Image (cartoon, one colour):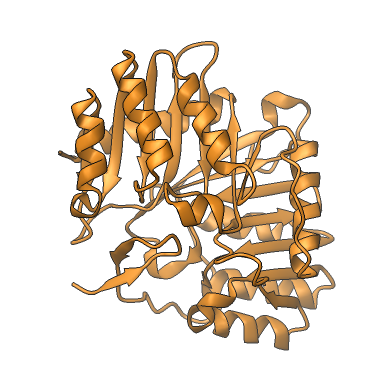
Amino acid sequence: MRIRRSACGAVSRSRQPILLPAFAVALSLISVDPGVFAAPANAATDFSTIVFPDQSHSAVYDFIDSATSSIDITMYELRDDTAVGDLVRKQQAGIAVRVILDGAHQSVNNAAYTTLANAGAAVTWSTSAFVYTHQKTITVDHGRSLIMSGNLDSTYYADDRDYGVFDADRADVDAIEQVFDADFAQNPGTPSDGDNLVWSPTDAESRLLGLINGAQHSLDVEELEFGDSTLVNAIADAARRGVTVRVVGMNPDSYRDQFDQVQAAGGQIVTYSASGGTYIHAKAIVADYGTATAKVFVGSENFSDNSLNHNRELGLIVGDSGVLSTVENTFATDFANGTPY
């Protein structure tokens, strides 16, 4: 087994790329939340969720194809022929396509960069102000954003557990677009959180710490990386004060000290191995599920100092019942199928 270094400094597996026909159109019989593309009438319809790999990426391609005026993408890794082909066709149809790709991963992103640039799209490498631009976000027509934990990299679609949340909250989308404009111009500033956003490197650690510390009944954490001492200490503290803590993690040998700490405090942990099968690439937290104060986090932020304090990352924390139930039910399945630590 070969290994690869993640954007946040931890070691994770390397898998052979899936070679797709150029610009192939993905087909899927998997149903998607019915509210994904409907215009939001109120806060109850502002959010909907995709779960990978249970659902295919056809919902992402459909979202790109729905654009009538603009598409803005910030992506750590873009290696998906279908997505790139859709973007090229949209650019050629007169849609304004702008893309920020992580400059530290030019070996992965260069093919997409070149194809998009040759098609006339506005594409740029990320600013050097951050160690990595690890954000994974698509915004269409300045009206709806897709915030993901996973990249647009078809190499990993078959195995990776990831989440995506469609967000039509006006304040959120405006903030995402303002940050995109600044990052695209290589002049990043201090982002607004809108109504629900969690940004690195400005406030991700404090926002996630607040979510964890606020849990009163239950705390479910699904994270690829588990090395940030501030958040791990808070999870252990939650278990000690009587909160039911469950963790789904990866690579137990990489985080043995942290898993031992949470388990000794009373938390329950299951893990997955990089040797095959489901790969927990997700970054999600559910606090107090089933109560009036329940909240869920989904985003690109891993539990590492680099991810929280030095990268450009984006997530969100919402109390939306649909997002909560989708993430919690998926977590429950992953917890049941993991290897007890």
